[in-house]
Amino acid sequence: MLLQRNTKNVLLALIAGLIFGSIVGKVLSYAFPDSPAKMVVFNEVKIGIPQISLNLLIFGITFSFYFSINIFSVIFALFVIYLLIKL
Image (cartoon, rainbow, N blue to C red; front, side, top):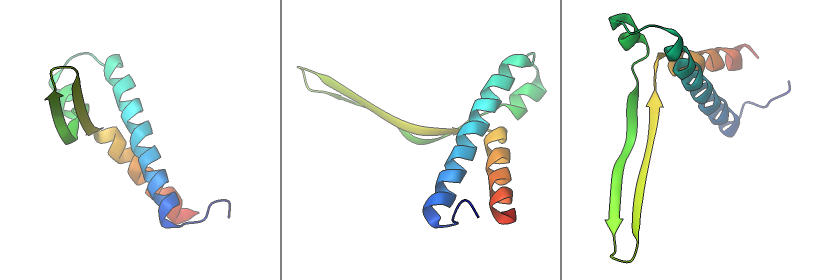
């Protein structure tokens, strides 16, 4: 077996699946015309911390962190789980 199934490797594989799925979903969304079906399939849910701004007169800091999850990210994550179970 090439890859050990410890928690770190499983978590990295799931994150990679979510990232690649999000990229595929974003690229495919440009190929389809605007329609209600496109809005359903390519709709993204943003999970994370909203934009926080700190203004200190001399400088300002803005921080935001979120994940954008769509159908393709979930499909790719499930595919990675399936591959990890089969290997």
